[in-house]
Image (cartoon, rainbow, N blue to C red; front, side, top):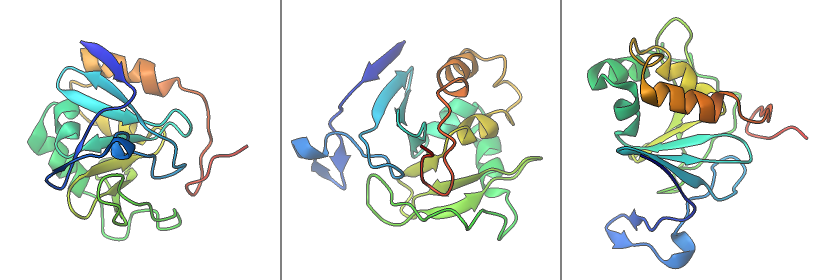
Length: 164
């Protein structure tokens, strides 16, 4: 089941969200994220910069093998992440996220919330991480994400800013 939700109520640290907190804003361009729902996973997507937010535990569902996914995400060498990128704030808790490098043959720098609220991927980063999973390319969700994100408009974002 695939769906798009333009604004979804969220619970923030044990309290119900106020209406103005309904949609999360993109950590890069500050535009509201839209929610793409696929089975058990809600992918928060920015139509401006093509970034993707995944709540805690959602990437493991997309990847397929939770233990292998956690190993890949934690497998980057210390200092391998790209520190030239601007620090971004978590769209849930507003704390500065930590730049982290994945393991694998082509490490990917992504942002993770220090409180464990979720992960932020700039354009193309999520697909690169998911490609490390053996079953991803042949899976239904792989085809869906490939169609939605791989062929999106070219934003050419660098250092957290969108090229004009």
